[in-house]
Length: 455
Image 1 (cartoon, helix red, strand yellow):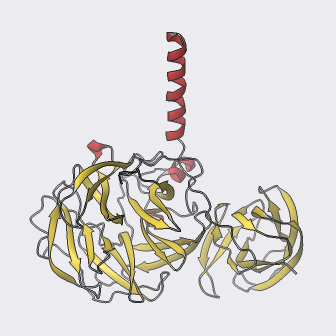
Image 2 (cartoon, rainbow, N blue to C red; image 1 turned 180 degrees about the vertical axis):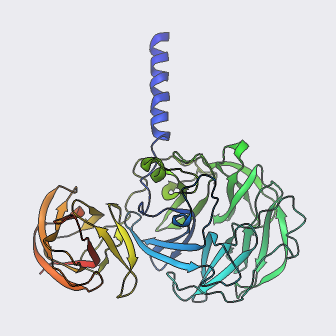
Image 3 (cartoon, rainbow, N blue to C red; image 1 turned 60 degrees about the vertical axis):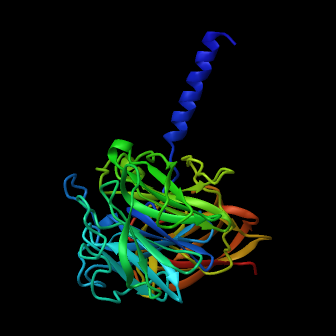
């Protein structure tokens, strides 16, 4: 190969690399702005708890205002169910004005949700369900500047809690921000709502925020967001102890495409595979709006080398594989989807959420629906004050093959629900399903849930 050919080949590789880096995963729940994902794997589902950026202004200088936490979940890593706001200040926690960067953990039949009151103290909330409601069990901060061991620290940001339970049952909370010496770890008692002893320090090169701990094959991995000088990537350290002896390991993930600002990760194992979830600003970029305070969630696969070190995450156009098909023969909440156009959600009079705002030409995409030998009927709980609306069931795309058409009646009120059904023909095997709305431009169609039948 001559020099010209070598240079051309190198240029090709460079362009290919740029193309890969520039293409991030489709965002999760793209009709909401969500950030700072905390993870919980529980009863066959993964739950992500997020700062609610819908509460932030588009104004470039407005700052972060998030005072509620939104929960979403999935059993297949492609279709995500929106559970809406599960905790809010001051509604559920009178002493706090903010609920930033949540993290959750399960113990003794309860779910514990930790959050930062801005950068000024850490709180805890509890629930018997991963989707809430969560309530404040102690009526005060769990960790504050007066907590022994938190200070001294130069310009400490007291936030970004992450709680980890070790194999021996001991629970630890990691938190802090804004300085290499500002990482703190503190033991929690079995009740998970009180601390055991003082906080101790961990030093992490270029540490900025987003403390996270996970354990694999006896190795403790402390990951975090680096400071702006270090590109706000996610780095990690490794140790044989959860509190001491850490050595720098390398990069978990570079700054995400379409982000260019603060970074935050959650690392978790689900159904035998490790994952890296994070936020970017892809939706804001796509909409052409100011990006600083409008973030969105995404997820990628996380792999390890033979020596236990982490392979740097590769950002992809389609993210992670679907781990199992979606069962259409069970009740499926309408707010379960992989993609959408025109969708919003709202509190449903029947409990939970319903999909709303969908009108002529809008659609919901459900990835990898496993129809098996074939579906014969489709049913849905719908509400509308409009006439002549219908839901076309299409395969493969929003204008793909029609397998059924559901007429949506005027139910008299946008929260007056009626179950209606239609025949289905041609739905077999695993398919991407689109619920495409056709009919009047307004009023919109609301959907609570749907299901297929094989009979």
